[in-house]
Length: 137
Ligand code: 9YT
Image (cartoon, rainbow, N blue to C red; front, side):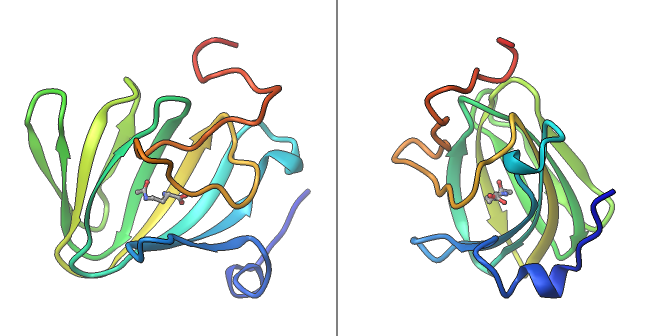
């Protein structure tokens, strides 16, 4: 069994800051923990408005706190985000996230993030050399 505390993880290298200043992410579970997914508590700063495209991962995002919206750049649909909302990027959807207030999100990635990944120019996380893209295992 693994038991961890968010406040303790925040004091370690598991706490990663976006170089663009849009978010911070505490990766409470990583690939090295061996369970096949990673689990992050992510804070999106109020006013953030940025694009992502997780070409190599599936991601589930559950809103714990805050208000915002998620736009699919595949079809232009915009969905409100508030506490209790789950969105799942099951099609590697290109998307834009807007935080109307600070958002606290619980995020799960498959395949798991390995450590200190931040978005590349396309808004994706690169895979380690040996990993398979999500859906191609
Ligand atoms: C919602 C989202 O994808 N935010 C970017 C950070 C990511 N969730 C992470 O690495 O925790």
